[in-house]
Length: 257
Image (cartoon, rainbow, N blue to C red; front, side, top):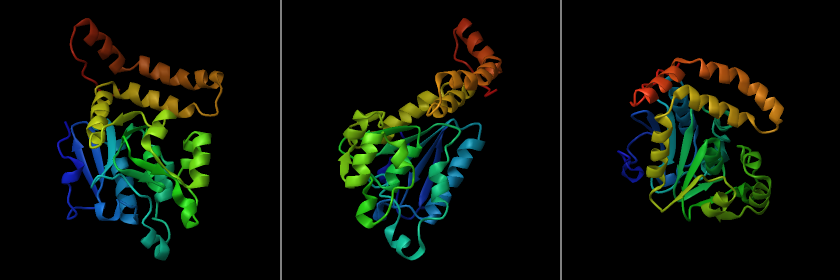
C-alpha cells in the first residue's frame, strides 16, 4: 500500500515532494492549485530527484505522480508568457533514467504533462483520465517527445486536432500499460514498482537498456548490442546468487553487481 496518498499532500510543501518508500522513490508534482503545471523550480527538482534515483543503490525504481487528483497540465502558461519555457525542461524530457520510472496518472496529463508521462518507462492511468497534445490551440508545438514517442497515427491525430482524449485510447495503442479505477493509479504503480525492485538490479537495468535501444535497429544489430550485456549479467555475483537462492529455496539477496 502507498504510505502517503497523493490527495494528502498540502500546498505548504515544496513544488516537488520526494518520498523514498523502501526501494521506490515517489516523486509528487505538488502544485494542485495550478494543475501541477511545470515551472523552472519544479523542473529542477525533478532533475535532481532523478539523479538521486540513479545514484542511490538502495533505490531501484521511481514513481512519478501528481497531487490533487491530476497529473500535470504542461508548462505554466502564465510564466511562459513572461519568461519562456521552464529552464532545463527540454533536457529533462529528453533524458531517460537509468532505472525504471512509472507514471501514475489521475485526472489529466496534457501537453508537456503527457510528454512527462511518456518520458517514463511504464504508464499507469485511471480510466477517464484526459490526455492530449493541445499545443496548437495556443500557437505552440509539442517538443517534449510526444510526436515521436507516441505511435505515429495517434500522434498525428492528437497533435493536428489538439483533441483531448481519454486514457483508454492510449491503452488501446499500448501506450498505457495498466488502466485502473479512478483513485487507484498510484497504488497500482507502486505495486508494479515493488515488483520491479524485487528483481536483480543489473538484470532490470540491462533489460531496460536493450528495450530502449530497439527503435530503428535491426535484429542483427540488437544481437550485437546484447552480447556485452549478456556477458556482464551472466558473469555477475547476482547471477550466482540467483542460482544459489533457487537451489536453497530462499529469497535472493541482490548485491547489484
